[in-house]
Image (cartoon, rainbow, N blue to C red; front, side):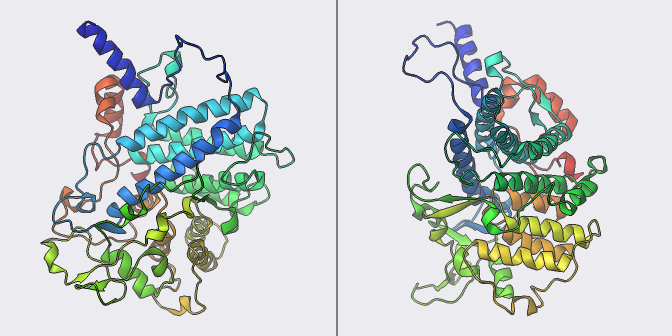
Length: 479
């Protein structure tokens, strides 16, 4: 094979990886037993499970470090908790999300062809969810021309983040009108809601609240008016009202619903909880501590000394700590376990923030307390009757107080802690001299190198529009 031919083969292969083209080009050998067409239900459960489990693993691998939940230990230098972010930090996110975007496109097409509006609505909802995660991670991304490798579009143009959000918000609004609880889901039982159309519709509208709040700094999106319309008309726009309705995937441990951790012990090997994460829970006397972590021990390992973390991005050697710090609770990743997509608690904190800012007539304190209670109970803990008598836990009318509790409510929920920190600046995370990147919290992933090389022209247009391809380049809704 000539060098030129080899290069062309490589270009096609890599483009398919980067932009989630299908690999179903004309087959030389056709299997007569292979199903030609798939139903919407065939695609639904793999999308839910694979996306949820991947996001849970990324919450641990990236969000925990960047948001000072936990850190590697020992870790004398480097690491994402010191804002030492590699060029490839976002590669798996890009590749996985585009893979499932391709499947969602096919799911929507098959649902439309079957004239099944419920599956069409679910496809629109899940597609909006995935694209919101993707664009919040990178900024401008291919959308209109993405996942069209079968049409020979191997170098897709990028859409601006405003275009992405405008489209997916409109899709959620459309999906809300398509759901029909009188029509059964006929293509099997979905693993998230067991075919409860009402809960799917509540997920759709709750997700729309999340996304509208995310872009609320942009006046052209008219977010606050639209959020008030949703909240003030629950019959037309139902949202989560309990933990039982939340988008929380239950991973049973029975194949194929297995833990993303092949070995649960890997979750706790050479790990520690951070001082910030642990100390705040101690000050709150929070019942989630025993769910989230184990107690620290004396240096000899013989005596428990309570919940005690170590500073993220600590300077100096590991020998400075004269105790074995608290570690993550291995039960979190041992099936049966849960994978959070969107919680009911998040909805209550959105309502609290809007009421606090006087964008709705709701009771900010009541929504705050409901959010805390839901977040605690989501993890199987019980809120004590005197929890809010603690001055550290009581509602004080500030966004900072709401966001501290929301930080814990978003625990183990993909990148949501990171996104909300970028939106609000809360909670205030401590800085150390060992942090790189001028002690600035990174605000995005860099585009994968494969995009820079094999889709260079469109990549350069996107970078020019955004103002750079850098971990400190703020995305559209942050400006």
